[in-house]
Figure 1: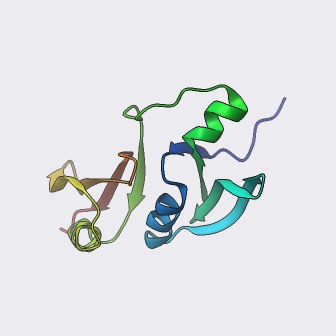
Figure 2 (figure 1 turned 90 degrees about the horizontal axis):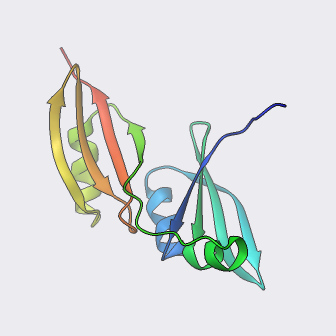
Length: 127
């Protein structure tokens, strides 16, 4: 048995708002699934990483799941300058959960996507 092409799927309340959020981060739309002519799932790729976003409604109706607010994982995005990235996102209305701070040899902060999923913005500290 071989497993391949891993990705993370997030269940969201506002599919198009979430799509726009991730596109603002540089993700590119590669696939959309529709049920009865309505988009229910998008797949977006950034630097080889595939992120799926699907409506909570479709998770319930199609798969019998009961997704809630996810607080058990985060998406990590590396950048050259965490402070500038957090400032950029804040200016575009993104909720900042943790301002940029130093730890180990890194500088990082956290923001939330429109559904409260954690996005860890991180860079290596400059010497």
